Image (cartoon, rainbow over all chains, first blue to last red; front, side):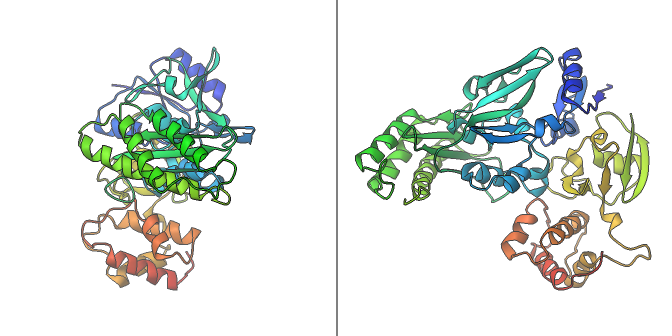
Length: 289
Length: 156
């Protein structure tokens, strides 16, 4: 079957092509779509190459962080000193070859529950920016993700990027997998502290149909820091037992399943241990912590 | 569709199937069999090339995405007289080649690493090669080859 391939050089051209071909698939790094094409699992009527669109490569940090859909994991690693969770998540993706090609937009568009950037965006209450020839709109991350590998993208729309308030505190990301590279996570965690709002936010991946937040764990973490006087003075750490309790509450929010990568039981165990460690690491990253 | 690209310094074109990967175009349409075809899902690295100077799995690039772009393969490393690139020489001298199937991808990945970091640590080396699988050597001789190539910085 013929596949129509379009190679637009501007965002407007790309959106025009997508408007005329609502079932076209955009391709950037190809790290997901090419696998499906090579296997014969997908035969889109049309493919629109978005890898030449400079408009998707913007990345500003002006009050809000706006991360363009075309930014690759390698560029995140090269350009984001000081953003611990984002850097740790980008570093956990694939291999050098995959990080050189895979993009923010691809991670969002594929919408895998195991997508490595998604817990970071979720822990920052990120909005996902969508554009089409008719205009643009912005959706909170949890409205954008509608299920495993399913999103609210409408026909003709393209992911422009993600944006979130500049994090006012340290963060960390970690994942579990059978080796140190080229793994789809068995579970993943991002913990973010917001010193201004005096809040802790935690998001978990690969332990539910979509990336999940753990509100009970977030409330507990806030209270544990408050009881220790840690909001005023980061050197005053919560009790040693707080990290373990935080891990238990994170695990309680997980809705894992058995699949080819792991079992529900192991995932619940691993996410508990990972969340406890991540909590401790995040606290240690506070100035004076 | 007609795809035109520069491979190892030479402009080439082929009428590739629209859904074809860059790897298929190189091997099947242009007869350039240096990059190897194994997993076709970016897992093994045997098809590794440079796309506009950036290390990539050619199986994950749509051939049309490489239109008007520059592709570097294993076949561009040796000199005109057949004199081997220092990384190729190091692989031979270290005995880092057994069945040889992963070798083109690994030589390209090692060359890329040493161009960016002429004196990589063991950890940096392992991380840089994490996208290239070898099922024969157990990697020991490959790491030996990297150490050898690192000690012998040579002209490309």
